[in-house]
Image 1 (cartoon, helix red, strand yellow):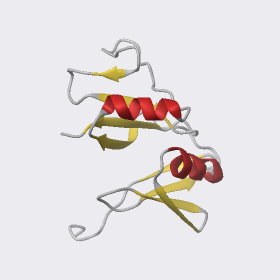
Image 2: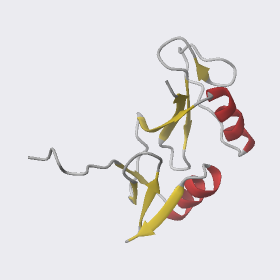
Image 3: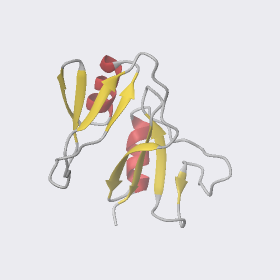
Length: 123
């Protein structure tokens, strides 16, 4: 029934203007706005919908993953823009918040609404 529907992903934030600034200005993603919602124009896929929700609660899982050729360089670039990685307790993370050797090399960070994002090694 839905095998030909061009599906897309979405998640909520508590402030569209702040989200737009973060995704466009900090992360450098193409962003458009329509009907009070954002579309993140990520490489290689359908836009990701970001919508406002007054009682927004951040997801407890990773909502968006960014494959990169060099996680160390991506973490360094994020830090230079004021974005800090998450230091999860009980996980094999280095001092910069990068996990290696348990699946792809990956580091997590949050957007201003608290949603979890990641940069992971592009295989």
